[in-house]
Image (tube, rainbow, N blue to C red):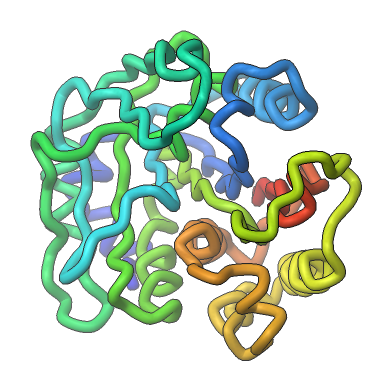
Length: 286
């Protein structure tokens, strides 16, 4: 894990201005349509963005970990100067495909960060992606309502889906020191995500019992500061399997929780459900 002493010597951190410690966000992003519909979820993102921009020091950089960029055999970070807006979905109105989020990248910072962050098992540096990825909808759909001017540089960090939950949490712990240099860390996924069980006619306050049960466990662990316990979600057995038939939408929570500190008080927002099987629960630490 990067220590504060290491952070003080870090070329990356020296390239960013010291600032009051940035918060950490985990955002439940749900349907891509939330990016353009006037609903409670989007308004919640707008409110958080307004709060962050009203700080004496606004974020210098956003590092986003989205459920929609999965790699195997290692982690990658976007290093292009102008990351493209990726429309990684289908079957939605043209208005959603027309959305663009032209936030700049940060190639120099990405190259330095890739060297400083290490694979939790092999200690190998990360790879820099220069042309394959960009900003997928897990990133731009929430950042556009938060920071509509798209004037804050954005990097995306992939998730190595071949690695156990403990390693994702460990990499999140390495991100802690970045908060002292104006980096806003955003995990974007969902605490419950089962598309197969979705009911599009369900109200926002309706959910399956297993969805409520799993979401409540996550809420309790965060509220009690038991962030280490979040990486053990699969011990919940059948409930975890129902909440996450695949668990790529849960993993971003581990990065955000890893970057949080025990002194950070969590604040929940956007609590509720989409389609009875997606929890929109979001949390801000610090």
